[in-house]
Amino acid sequence: MTHRAASRPGTVSRFKFSPYPQTGQAPTQMDELVSRQMPHSTVAEQAVLGSALIDERCIPGIIEKLKPEDFYLRQNRELFETICSMFNYSETIDPVTILEKMKQTGVYDENTSYDYIRQLMMTTPSAANVEEYIGIVRDKSLLRQVAETAGAITGMVQEGSATAQEALEAAEQRIFAIRRGRASQGLEHISSVIYTLYDRLSELAASDSAVPGLSTGFSDVDAAIAGLNKSDLILLAARPGMGKTSMALNILLHAGKFSGKAVVYFSLEMSREQLAMRLISNESFVDLKKLITGRLGEDDWDKIAAASAALNQTNILIDDNPMLSVSDMNAKCRRVENLGLVVIDYLQLMTSAGGPGRYGDNRQQIVSDISRALKIMAKELNVPVLCLSQLSRANESRSDKRPMLSDLRESGAIEQDADIVMFLYREGYYDPDTEDRNLAECIIAKNRHGETGTVELQWLPEFTTFASIDRRHEEDY
Image (cartoon, rainbow, N blue to C red; front, side):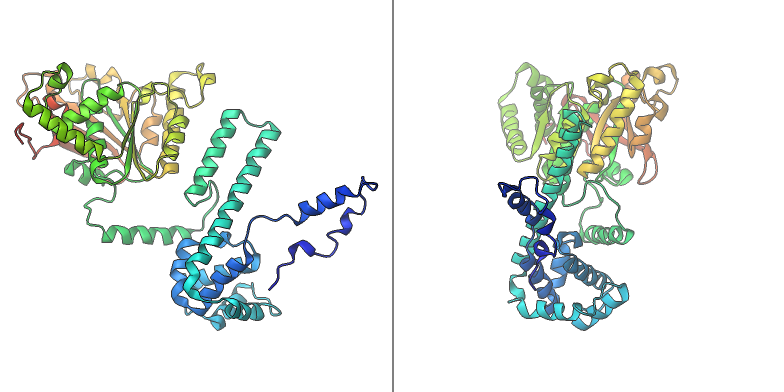
């Protein structure tokens, strides 16, 4: 079938009232504009559909890689939607059943549908090259999405409806959405969501992992919160000196070593060198004081070398810029391939999500904006975001100094936005004479994936690290 979208009756005649009759140039230029089409390949689209018709074994692979909107021509898109619908309901797929289904759905054209399907089967050379056909269709679809995004951003700039920062953020967000293979906004039918959910359930059923999300490295914590799950905002809060950064580095190191993904740590308080030193102490079990003072023995150097080699094998990325906003972090993370986890230390030091113009707002509103932006970032990146937070001094005046949700500093919006809220508490911090001064509690105060409760951990102060209560590390380990 030959596509003649550019030669419709009346296409040229509409330009006979040219304001430039002497030169005759304007009609030629306008003809070019009218004939210019969005990128597409009619032949490739037909070859993909023809492959599905002559060999139904191709259909699962086609549906996995293409969506109906990837087809530019309406007739091809409707035919593909019909095939997808029949595949989802495990119906027999052949030319006869497809035509019958198209009649039921109201997209059957009695004059052309039968001839068109027959033509597709006759003109497709072979289903053996279907992967190449799919690649061409997908490439043209991506080019159309890029063109549409460029047009939308250009319109935003010409209208003057956005600042340069807002336009840049919108452009990055849209391009990132294209890279992820999904629209940045839009409604999705529940059937598509269920189809995706079934894939996720099958993946979990086939996995050997005890938890659906990334492991924290603490088995009891994993069991309580089901690991660190995609799109979750996890808040880890405590009073100063309780070990928030140490716990975060524990989780970061474990994810970096065993997840096979890139993990990002944004430190708004400590330098990269300080963080690297603590990671080496954590991994090598060399006393942090020895690393700080440089008083190291020969065995210590061997342990440090082994720990450094192990860290070099991970994909741990660190940023210690103290002036980052959520949009800055989001933009940086979008460029990280195979991202698995984002850690932020800590929330109260972050720059307002609204920029310098928001400095007049009260601090509670600013923190609310930041926490909301963090949740949006977690959903957009589709990775867990672990954010550290300070607590108010309210618990200091209570006899039981264990923190509560009401102690979250400066904003109740943090509690609302977070999917999981965990507190760290060590009785030995307040009472040095307690029976086990290195016993720590991880208090799960909010948990959208299960119950709340308390998990006991062991605090190892010389290495500034935590360990599961049943794994007490000896220095000669």
